Length: 308
Length: 113
Image: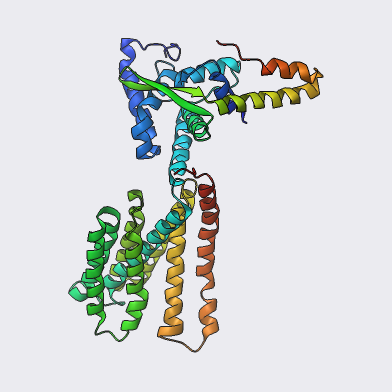
């Protein structure tokens, strides 16, 4: 290995190695947010290449480690630029997106054992909800509003013949309206979050399809596994951003509240205490996600620059 | 103030430097104790810029890449001097040197490199 010191011009024979090193360093730089990379990547790469002894095709371990922690710190700082209120709005938007995904799977299965692909009234609301979710991330506000209005009309029409229209309004239409209202704000959720509701849609679709073909247990297991993984990822994500964990907590909270509304208002049972005590595990999950996330969000807000 | 931050600021006492020069200068000044990784340096520079202790002075293009020069602000110089005084006072407890001797030596303008 060459003993050429750092910072010296590299010999011609070392240019290929230098190119390989630069490519690898640029790959590592992907840990940084895209906006940061646009502004600083060339400068940091230049310094990194100067500081790396000649003859190396890999960055030093301590440089790689510092780039990863630096990238995470830059991501954390960029998340801290928004106000706490905006961050909370984006978190709840994410939670509602995951919650609405729940109904996409629900519409596909349309009750256990009833395969629904041949029933357009049950499939169309699902497609429109997916469209609203995608547009909230990617399109103009008018497109979101139009798609949400269409989804609301189709949901009402599709459930008009059902015995519990009130339930549909409470557990689906109301969250859709709140989601659309939150999506109207100027601050868009990061596109990197799209995979979270995407995973939820996939999990519920799998569970929905599995239950539709009578694989109830397998479907529920798949759903549970996806949500355990989502929980783990959101907690790990707390290192740089509290919002996905708050989003997932608000989803579970909403799920609990709608279950409560079902059991206490829509179809009240005889044992209210049993209904309430069944909510404890869900409440524990919500707290396990929300408490560390609230602590992290507070730290994000504390580091926010007053001018931004 | 942590030691790497102290030596990043100290490296800029003599005038603005670019990233790699800051790494080398900090290593020299600390007699090899502070060997900053590139990612660590830029995280520190971002934080110090946000805190108003360091500012971007100029930039040039070298070999097709942007090279930026960073310099101390007045607040940065004051913070560095205050930290040096604090450490000198702490050292006096052990060395027994008169407080005035240490303080007056540190309050003098720094030598340019």
